Image 1 (cartoon, rainbow, N blue to C red):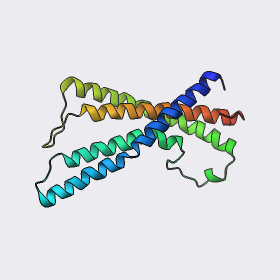
Image 2: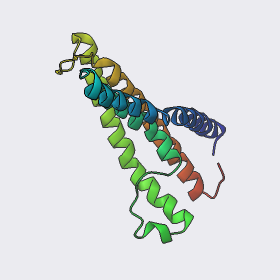
Image 3: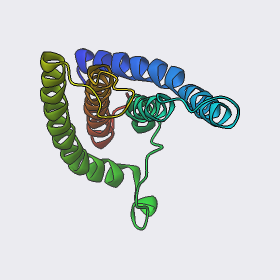
Image 4: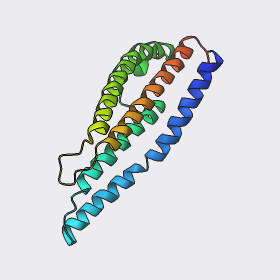
Length: 168
């Protein structure tokens, strides 16, 4: 593979690895929010913000952790036939399927960007009693989809290198 492709793979993998390792502790943030929700309902007064804050934390957890999951090959896959294939045949199949993923992520990113710009332009707020602004979580979604798209391209390059018999 050309040096710029190897550099791209190393850079994207390093960024997504570090972000994924940091974001995986976000589950504790979400648990803390939900714990506070339970405690406040039982002993004090119900908090208006806890459910929605937990939902936002979950969105950030999943969307920013997605590229890390792709990188570690920890995502869900139907292994009925795939598990018995050779590494080269798996790489061919992955090249084919990752093109669909790249298209899908491109559509998601386009929609997320459009929704985020609308949200910022008009000051969109949630319809709940807490009424937080929606643009921060939408920005997180745009960042997550962008990172996932970059990671998918990195995986495409790695699969092409496997097909060519090269090491990345």
